[in-house]
Length: 460
Image: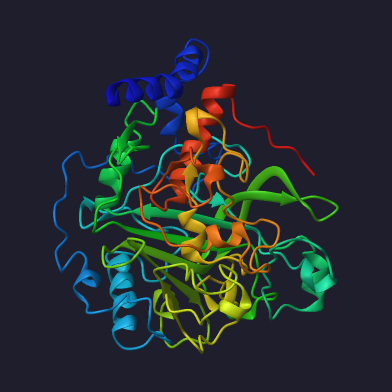
């Protein structure tokens, strides 16, 4: 039976791809593209190259030198209020950043960006299939993809859901950017994570599936202990609008242009962005979810001579706090015990729902773990539709507002891979072990397999 299931799933994922190979590029060609477009004639700046030579052999146990956080004495009990990010918690998050910073330009200059090769060896790897979508896919300078726009419309009473406020902006900025600031980000996995990615998406570009504990899952998952992810998030906001961005790393990215009505259009051109946030995540089996997420925010007021030194730790999170509102009613709610936060980061920081962790450009009605734990692919190779055949990651009606609702209870719950999403509506969805990048990759492959072409970008 198990072999039959695997063969059937492989056929579902591969049938459309094979039908397309005679007329278009293969799935392998498209999966491992560097970017959605190429530099213009005469361009002399940096050019992104996908790091996809994934390790073929299991890297084995992660040593103290390579994974120092695993050797720090922290406790993930969910029955005690931990509070602020001090002591061993600060040591934990800073040890992760120390590894991220090894061999990198301390100012993350536009010319160097974030290097995947450190000390002559590949240290960081990218997820494939992220240069297929024409709207949000990888751009050619730093390999960033378009993520959530940090909206300013709440200032004007707009009903726009899940808006993030970047405070400190002037009235002229509110007028100039009524549709918010774009976020462009690039994420990398270390060799432990890359070992799993290489099995899940082999050179054919067609996702490889298997069965684990009765659940269909990607080959190679769960991500092994030692896995670390680092993501650099840049914003189109300027220091005139967000003063604490003064002195931050300035990257040129090939991002969306603004139309005459100040809305973001499909067309792209080289424009400035500035580093505003760095996210990190590690697999730590002591955590109830198997993962620990951390966030840093850039601040021009932080003590330090370099951009990396001015990244302020904002907090850590290892669970969704299922005993806290809105997972339960306000009457039954207890304070969060699965996040530790920086109470005085020196910059505006909204955090997430009910003081769960979230970063400056993240959804304030969500949290890091809650959002990432909703990473699923649609069953049967279908194109995912959030809230229909895969769980909603970014927003749903009543998010962080209706205590004890089925959707909030499921979203703010703790479950470890390969368990299905707690809402039975999505029982057939394929768990991706907390990787939103893998969710994008699987979605883009499904779009190719079903439609033979990327979803068209449509100007507003």
